[in-house]
Amino acid sequence: MQHLLTILLLVFTLTVSAQTKSSQQSPPLTEARPASVGMSAERLARIDAMAKDAIEDDKVPGLVALVARRGKIVYHKAFGTADPSGNKLQKDAIFRIASQTKAVTATAVMMLWEEGLFRLDDPISKYIPEFKNPQVLDRFRYADTTYTTKPADKEITIRHLLTHTSGLGYGFIDGDERFKMIYQKAGIIDAFTTDDITIEENIKKLAKLPLHFNPGEKYSYAEGLDVLGYFVEIMSGQPFDEFLREHLFEPLSMNDTWFYLPSNKANRLVAVQQRNGAQWEKYSGNGYDADFPVKGAKTFFAGGAGLSSTAKDYATFLQMYLNGGELNGIRILSRTTVKSIMGNQIGDFWKGDGRYYGLAFGVLNQKGQDQGGQGSAGTFDWGGYFNTQYFADPQEELIGILMKQIRGSNGDDTGWRFRILVNQAVDD
Image (cartoon, rainbow, N blue to C red):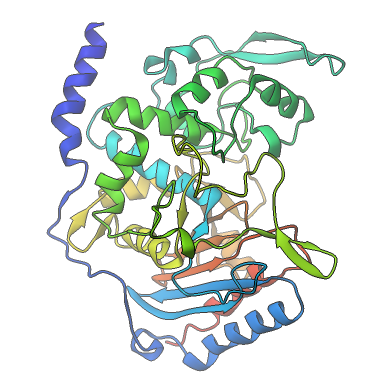
């Protein structure tokens, strides 16, 4: 009890200043001519051709692309349609960014870590007792989904949750059918819902379920960032959405980034679409509710996949990282913390891949740079379930964001092509 009271006192005295004024004064993102920051307008125009070809060939119904360098937006265009009705896609369209939420949640965790509230290698059970004495799946019966477990050899830490090394599963996208069945039976919400449920309720159910493996044993994409969304609530004393709004989104002027959209922004939300024969139609499936994030109870703030945003808002978030944790005179993170976030946290678990995983992003190593088309060593990136993606290259001070809302590949190759086309437009 005394430990809990100490935490609450620290929360009260510290979280009022999770972000601070900075002596550094990097300006907000503004538009500029490509040549002014060493980019070729003629080469950037190749993105136009790629986008138009993809839409004409019915690979995608529409997309928004943004390129920024040295804090200046040099390319920001929308192509195609926003929904099956044929409404024209706009540059300020709002997209469900799904797993791009994870880097935002990790940033919130590190903001609180900077206040000295916890260590990254603390067991999460210190703050969420339901995770005490985790169990690893041993035997499983497909006939009735019953199973046995054995004790894990260590506790799950905050670092494990940040780096997808906790052993937790991922429900409907899990590669192991057993965990899909276990999570479904337990009623775990993996990402999107219009139901009246909170992350606290969901995470406490999740804590009772078995792990894939002993914590820290390997990398496996998991719901760790959802656990950390609830952890942020505990450590800050605020609902997760309010913490992000007050300490991250408002300071960075990310006014179009929300878990559930205000009514005056809902008309800018792009429909998730899938191909059905010769037509694009609204997508639903795998537990996804087509009315998310506009309707429903609006009570579930999924730290791993719940946000919606615009290309410019997410570029603003990435620019803060390229600036070493600061934007417009507001210090979100120390550059020393950003260094740790970008460090290799998983060792050789991605051996030979050309990348490693830090505390919030996948990061390109020298081999990845040398393979070509992805950026310089140190480039950090990720994407989302509905085919949004981003990368930011600290060496070139370069950001690329490509926003789409589709399920199924349909031969779409705009992702890797966009990354090549952004990098080849560097002209200095």
